[in-house]
Image 1: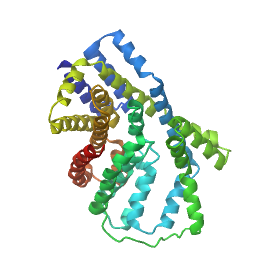
Image 2 (image 1 turned 45 degrees about the vertical axis):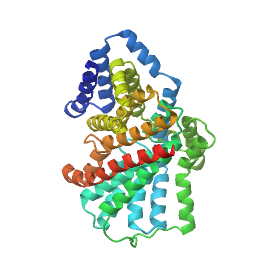
Image 3 (image 1 turned 90 degrees about the horizontal axis):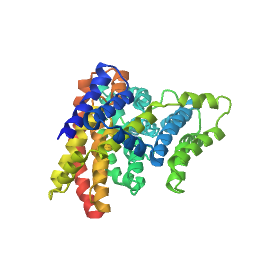
Image 4 (image 1 turned 60 degrees about the vertical axis):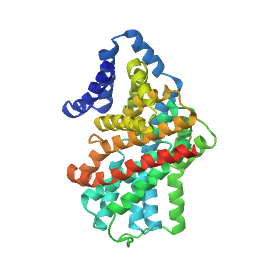
Length: 408
């Protein structure tokens, strides 16, 4: 029981550290993880074991991947590849509804912290042109920006799951996530996108249709190359991203390439991932928690198991604003259970969805904070629109679980 109390108290400290004491999220997580050790273990031997387990090859590969993705993202912004994608899309597709969703979706594929801030200006401008209320513009930016987290093999949660559960294919998990992603898209269009469906651009694109297609393909080529090398040739994701960086060097001017790399260096997120792995390995040492969840997961009622997982995921995700914290707590618990491969797939899928939803609706969610700041709209009015989609997503998560239980 004390181990449960220690974990809950520790995670409740997180918003206090980030909001009241203005510490960044990574440092706050480090303090919380060390707090667990002080409250539960107080043992250098256990601490040494956790550190040793954390610094595995798999963990280092994921951390390196996240580090390289930050560099690739900055290179794509620096050399205008991202602008090429957006301007080409605006020229090739005249549907406002398509554009206002496609732009944050494409930018979301870059998988950078606070990435919604990059797409907010485009969504805000298009939304004004479509007479969409500010709070709905904010929600559109958030929903389409985060669809990528479910279907992008570069997304940090999927990379983390792939590293933690190596027996499961990240691409198969993406396939299972697609129906929920489609529900998010359809629901967002229905709830938040009134108004005309097409428009005449005040500033016509200077390029021909063929040239726009070429610029679009060139813009997305680094992402496509990484997916092909990882998904088809099965090389590690970190190596695939490194090849994409090399590709950007080949197709772009060399003059300020090193400066662009230097500006893209981001040590905060890789360290955060390392801390989450540290938390995960700490949880593995907590026998009381592991045994309690084993008993809960051995319940003959599947609905009891799912509700326990749902509440735990949503609580930690909402309190921390970090879906990796949820995954770090529950993946080791799931892996400790005597599950068949099909059952493992089902629980990891359900865990991924609810870790996403807890994080997505958290008031500490960085993208939400940045979007609200840019569009300059009250948080409460955004939540009133935001929450409308939640019942549908919750229902679909259960429907998909039971459907997949028949198919897997």
